[in-house]
Amino acid sequence: MSDPTTAGPVDRPRDAAPGQEPALAAKAPTLEEVARRAGVSRSVASRAMNNVRNVSEAKREAVARAARELGYVPNATARALATSKGGSVVLAVSNDDPALFGDPFFSQVLVGVAEALDRSELDLTLILASSERGQARLGRLLRSRRSDGVMLLALRGDDPLNRVVAATDLPVVIGGRPLAGEARWYVDVDNRNGARVAVDHLLASGRRRIATITGPLDLQASVARSEGFTDAMAVAGLPADRVGHADFSFEGGARAMARLLEAHPDIDGVFAASDNMAAGALRTLREAGRRVPDDVAVVGFDDLEIARHADPALTTISQPIRGLGQEMATMLVRLIAGESPTPIILPTRLVVRGSAPGAGDQA
Figure 1 (tube, one colour):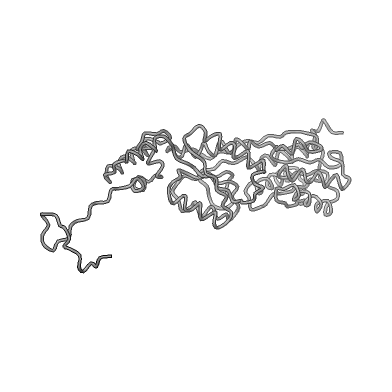
Figure 2 (tube, one colour):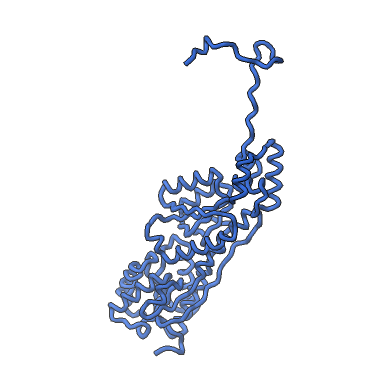
């Protein structure tokens, strides 16, 4: 390595005064700098510069103005790449259980998201972010602005993902309203009314000693379904004190049903806040010698495959699970394009089967 004290004289421009250091060449502005000044993600800036669709006119103008102010000149190679491919969005879930991919609810949501994105030029990145490492990965991805937006699914009460996305200015769509804080853009299901319809169905068939099995009460969906149960019982002038708690799983529902039978052996109706829990309750009732629906009628929530194959088949509240994913992705695409969509509440409907027939179908 040469010694700087013995190096030759520094070359200077011919018009530089003796002792005056040459001015450093100005660094060319980057697309990231253009995106920051325009207030958009890098991929939105790229698509705006290359006239790719899914960018609003307002954002195109903001990017063009920022490029002029910074003197940005697109690289020809980068232009070719950007023109051939759009950006991406993230679906983040606070769950890293391998069983998640076998969960019919999650798989249907994921299919719905993929179907909606298939109509756009956006790729999908899935991040399982229940661990600190997963949350840090999501944070780095959002800060890098390699994504145009993010979807969050099934947020719990104090979910750390809320804090991760709070630090970004990218559009965020939530599947299911969060229990804590406010969400500007979300797609949810009418959980409270669906539960109320389920209990009203049990009441109409003559059931009066009705119990409920709730899901985790740090999820908004669970809370809303529990409130729907309480609403219906209050209107009927009946106590809503036969309550068991579980985790949306088959085994959780079976255990909760066993505890309820021990505490309230006179139960004649059950509303379980998921089909998995309702199926578990059916097993416990059968093992306890209770006939369904003769002794105890059971209603679930979801209308999953397990509801159709239960014995007897489950009466349930059907929710548009795939539609939830489709609407989440569609809302995010609209936000990326500069539109201002409003929150969506999807309807539910009662599906009557053998576990709780209608009033005219009672044995």
